[in-house]
Image (cartoon, rainbow, N blue to C red):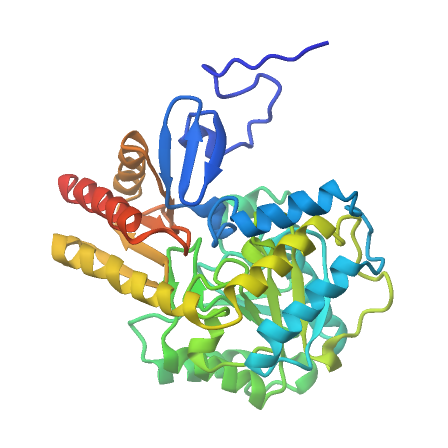
Amino acid sequence: MSTTFNTTNVASPIESEVRSYSRIWPEVFERAKGSAVWSDKREFLDFFSAAGSLNYGHNDPDAQAALTDYIGRDGILQALDMQTVQRQQFLSALEARILQPRQLHGYRVMFTGPTGTNAIEAALKCARLSTGRTEVVSFLRGFHGVSLGSLSASSNASKRRAAGVPLRDVSRFPFDIERLSARESIEWFERIHFRGRPSSEFPACVLMELVQGEGGVNVAGMDWAQGIAATCRRYDVPLVVDEIQTGCGRTGPFFAFEDYEVKPDIIAVSKSLSGLGLPLSVVLLRPDLDMTTPGQHNGTFRGNNAAFVTATTCLEKFWTDDKLSQQTRRKSDMVHSILADAGVSDTYAVRGRGLVIGIDVASGALARRAAELCFERGLLVETAGTDDQVVKLLPPLTTSDSDLARGVEVVAEILLDLR
C-alpha cells in the first residue's frame, strides 16, 4: 500500500498534540545545506540550527561523505555498547582533540542514551551514587530536559506541570542577577546550602548552565561563576555543568566553561556532538565519580555508530586548531555591531556569548510576533525566556558573513518596526 502526503496540510491527523515546531513553522521541509533549509515551497535561512544541534550547519560535506561511505561498506549501525572500531576512533579523537588540550585527559567518558536529557539523568545519578546524598541544587530559569530527573532540576513551569507527579530532591537558587553583587550572591548561596549543615546534608551536586539558553540567554558573570565553582570545591560537592546547548563551540571555545576558567567535575554534552544532527550524548566525569556498576545506567541506543563516524570526522575537521573558535568570536562581534548600529541595542536588551544571542523585548507577545514575521521573510528564529520574551539567535557557526548579516538585518528591521 502506498502512502501519499498532503503537503498543504502540515499536521497529520494521527500525530499527537504535543508537536511544537511544526506549529510555529507551518511548512513541510524537505532538504537542507549549510545555513539554508528548503520546504516544498521556498528557501529559509536557518538561525535555529535544530535548537543548537547543528553547530556545523546542515549536512557538513565531510561528515556526510564519511557516513555515506560507512553505510555503503555495511558498517555496523547498532551495537549497544559493544566495542567497535568506530567507537574507539571517536574516543581517540575526543581524547586528543578535546580532553587533553583542556586538561581533562583523566576524565572518563560515559555513553548514555542518545538525548541530552538522558545525559543529565546519568550525570545526576553519578553525583548521587558517589556522594550518597540526594539533593541537587540547580538555578532559576535553568532548563535541563524533560525526563523526571532532569525536569526536577528545570525551572520551566509548563514542562514541570506535565510530569504528573511531584518533582522532589531539588532546590533552585537564583541565577546570577544584577540586583545582587557576585559576592552577595555567593555568600547567600553558601549560607543556604552549606553553612551550619553537617557534610551528610550537603547537596549531592550543583547543576548549572553558564549560559542559560532556554531560560532566555542569561549569561553568568565571571566572578559569580567562579564563586559558585570555588564554593563547590571548598565543600567537596561535585559541580555539574550542562554543556548540551553551549558545547561544541557555540559560545566560542569548545566548552562554555573554558572562558570562565572553571573546571567542572561532571560535564553533560550532546546536541552538536555528532556534527550531523544524529543522536549522541556523553557524560564526562572525574574517575572518582564513576561509581556506576556495569549496566547500571544503560540504554539500547547508546552505541550509535553512525554518530561516532560523523562526530569523529567533525572533531578532526573543526577542532585540530582554534580557527572555528576565533571565527565564532569574530562573528559574534559582527552580530552585536549590526544590532548596535541599527539601534536595536538602544531599544532592547541584547545579551549572549559567541553565537547564542538573545534580544529581550520584555514581551512574549512581541517576541512571538517578531518570530512570526521573521518566518514570513524566510528566516527561522525561536523565542526563549520565562515568558518567551527573548528572540533567540542560534545560527550555524559556519554561516557565511553575508548570510549572517542578512539574517541579523532582517531581525533588526522587524524589531525596530514593532517598537
